[in-house]
Every structure is written in C-alpha cells, then in structure tokens.
Image 1 (spheres, each protein chain N blue to C red):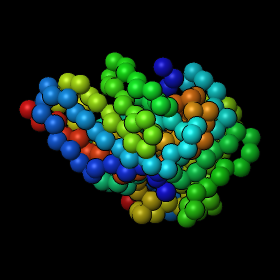
Image 2: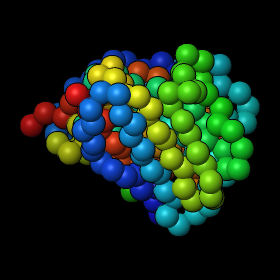
Image 3: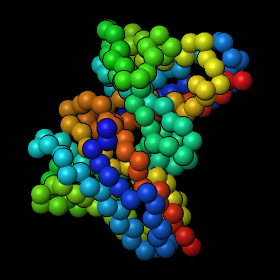
Image 4: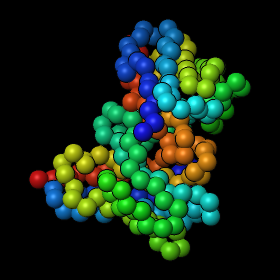
Length: 110
Length: 112
C-alpha cells in the first residue's frame, strides 16, 4: 500500500503559486520524499526530492515539516503546462521499489 | 540526466498473441528495474521488480506466467505479455533507479 495521502484534485490560477500537500505520517527515518508528475499518456517526470531539509530547484520547492510527517510541493508560478497529476512518494535513496498513491490532479486555469 | 527508454510506444495485437516490451537504461547500469501498469484514470500499479541475472519478483496478484520478465543485461529488461486478452490492454511503464527513479515514456498496449 502507498505510504502517502494527497488530495484528489486542486485548481490553481495561472501565474499563482500552486501548493500541493502530502501526508506521509509513517515515513521511516531513512526514507526520502519524492515528487513526480505525470502528464497524460507519458511516463512520470521527476520534480524534486528531500530528506528533512527544504529543497529548491528550477522546477519547484519542497517544504518538509520538522516531524517529517507531511510535506508541500510548491510550484511558484504555475503555468498551463503544469497541469498534470502530481505524485508524492516515499522511498529509500539507495534503491528499492516506489509505490504510487493516487496523486493530486492539478488543473491550472487561465 | 539519466534516461530510460521504452519500446514500442504503442502496440496493437490480436487476442491470444504475445507482445514484448523493452526497457533500456541508456546511460547508466541498472541491476534492478521496475514494471508498472496503469489503467485509465488510475495511478501506477507496481507489477514486478526485474533483477539482472535472476528471477523477477512479482507483486501480489500479478500472474508471473502471464507477464514474463527477463533482465538479461545491466541495461535491458523486457516484459512479455503472453496470450494477451482485451483486459490486458493498458499503459505499461518501466523504471530504473540511480538514486531517484527514471521512467520510460510508457507503452500503450491495445489487445483486439
């Protein structure tokens, strides 16, 4: 079973920040939080990952709570091309299978 | 970044025939690859873990005799759907990890 829970869907206005929450209350000490997104009929695309510190790259920022039981993916200026299903997954960085939850369907609207 | 390539992107086959899907890690070696299946409007479901040089590990409920997995080299894993039926029509996705996971572009299988 997936170790994460996410809202089923969210809307965001184009140009505004999209904040996607994820709960992972059973995460173990060595597990990372990974975020991927999937645009229709394509393979998932890596966005960002982190262990306990907040992370930022050219695509997004990842905020992980101090107790590591939840996190938020932030797309700072959402565009229409960010419309996709976003998956939050926990797993070990050295390998092993990744189990997908249901994800959040983000719709960015003009 | 690392690339995982899947072939073919789509395939249509007749019921009762077998279909082979290839997954290649193009610029890194992968002792382990993963195969997922995705039905419309659903999430990715892990089918099996492909292990180079040994037997694949199948998830509960996945028929190992129907979904044959071969991982003959460090850069290639294949999934063969044997005696395909319309209910096997789905989107199949492979993945390999070097730290983070990289995913193929997926294969749309339609069984008619």
